[in-house]
Image (cartoon, rainbow, N blue to C red; front, side, top):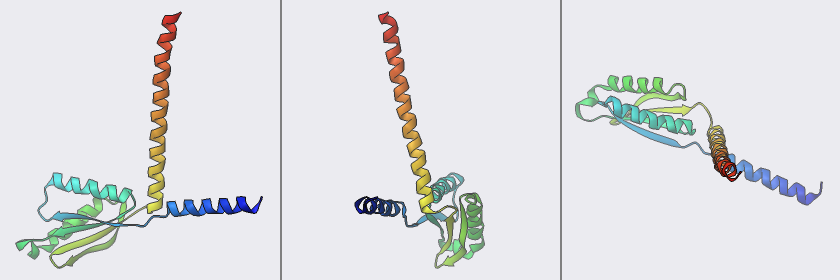
Length: 150
C-alpha cells in the first residue's frame, strides 16, 4: 500500500470518528406541582424523546406560594417521573431543592453516539423500504400495460 492511500484512509477514519463523536446535552423539562394527567404524559413523552436521543434530562418542579411548604409532594412527583422513565434512563441526582425549584437529573441508558447510530440505522431502513415500495409500484404499473398490449 502506498503512503498516499494510507494517509487518505487515516483521514477518512478521523473524519468518521469526529462525525460519531457527540456531546451529551442537558435538556430541561419543567413541571408544576399541580399538573394534570395529560400535561404530565406530554412532558413525559418529551423527556423520553430526549433520553432516546442520548441526552440527559433535568426534571424541574416549580413551586409557587403555599406549594413551597409541601416539598414532599414534589419528591413524590419526581419519583413517579423516575419510575416512568426507568427503562430509558437512570437517576443521576436525587431530588434536591434549589430555591423555589426542586430538581432531579436523569441520565440515558445509552450514550449519545449509540443513540445516533441507532437513529441512523432506523432512518436508512425507512429509506430502503420507501425505495422498495416505489420499485414495486412501478413494476405493478408496468405489468397491466404489458398485459393489455398482448
